[in-house]
Image 1 (cartoon, rainbow, N blue to C red):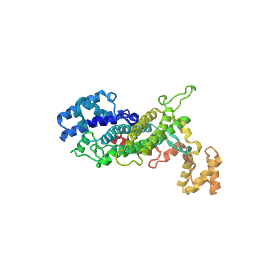
Image 2: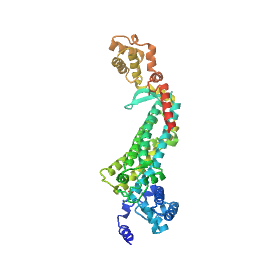
Image 3: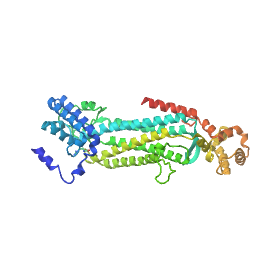
Image 4: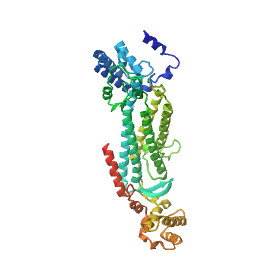
Length: 456
Ligand code: ARG
C-alpha cells in the first residue's frame, strides 16, 4: 500500500538522526497527548470521526501517555511517534486521529501549550523575587548605605531604596512576561499545514478544550508564526539582564563587606581555605549571557524565513526551552540569596559618607538658601578640592565660600544646616521627593509595590 511505500522511502538514510527532534520533543510529549485528545474529541463532536473510533483512539492515547516518552517507537518527531503508537494499538483506524490537521499546526499548538506553563512558572518566580525584595526592604528602610554612579561614591541612600530600585525593574519584567504569555496563549490548531482544511473543524472548540484564550485567525500565520517565541525569549533575556545587574551589585557589595551572603549561596575554594565566594551570583550574571545567546539564536534562525512552515522552525524551539529554564532558575536563586543576605548597618552607614558623598546635599542647602545652584556647586567643588580625599569641615567650606563669593558661607546658611547636610543619615532623610530614599518616600514605594503584588 502506498503509505507503506512512502514511509519506506523516507524512513532511513544517514540523515535520519539529523532530522529527528524526538529526543528534544520529550518536553512536549504531554502537550502532544493533550492536543491529540482535544483534536479527537472535536473530530467526534463534528461527526468527522465515528464515536467508537474516537473512543478507541482516546483509550490508546491514555495507554501511550502512561507508557511515557521513553516507550515511543522510532519516529521523526514526537507527533509521528505518538501516531505510530496509537495506530499500533487501534489498527489502521487510529490513523483517523490525523484527519484535518498537519504536524505544522500540531507542533505549533504543542509548543504554545507547553511554553504557557513555563512562562507561568517564570512569572511566578519573578513575583516571588519581588516579594523577597519587598520583605527585606521593609526591614531596611533606615539602613543608610553608599550610593554609586560610575561605581564612584555618589550620594547616600538606603538599602531599602536600593532593593526597591530592582523591584521596580522586575515589575516591568513581569509585565513583559505576561504580555508574552498572552500572545503565546492563542491556538493555531485547525490551521493544518497552513492552508486550512475542507473538514468542518471547530477551532474554537479545540482552543477551549486546551485552555487557549482564542484562535489565531489566519491559518498561514498560525502554522508559521514563531514571534511568540521571540517575544518570550526577549522578555526572559531582558529579565536576565536586570537580574545580572543585581547580581553584580551584590558581588561588589560582598567584596566591600557591605552585604553578607549566606553560605547557602556562596562557595569556597578547593585550595584557599578562607574563601567565601559569591559563585551563585556570578552564575546569575552569566545566565544573562545564555539568555542573550538564546535570543540571538532565535532571531538568526527566524530571520528571512519565507511563508509557510520550514523545518528551520524545529531548531528555533530549543532556544526557548533553554532560556526559560535557565532564567527561571536564576530568578529563584536570586530570591533566595536576597532573602538570606544580611546588611551590616554600621559598616554601611560609616561608608555612606566616604568620598564626600554628601557634597550634593551641601550644595542643595546653599541653593535652598537662595544661591543659584551653579554657584553653590562651585563653592562645594572648591571645598572638595581643598579637602582632597576626605569630607571638608565647616572651616574649609567657609574658606571656599570666601574664595568664590567673597563672603562667608554662614551669611547664607546656618552651621546647623551645613552640619545636617554633611550627615549621611540626615542627608537621606532630607531627600523625600517622590521616589526618593527618605524613609517616608520609601514607605510610599513599598505600599505601591505591595499593592501591585497583591493584585497578581
Ligand atoms: N518536528 C517538527 C518541528 O518541530 C514538526 C514537524 C513538521 N514537519 C514537517 N516536515 N512539516 O517543527
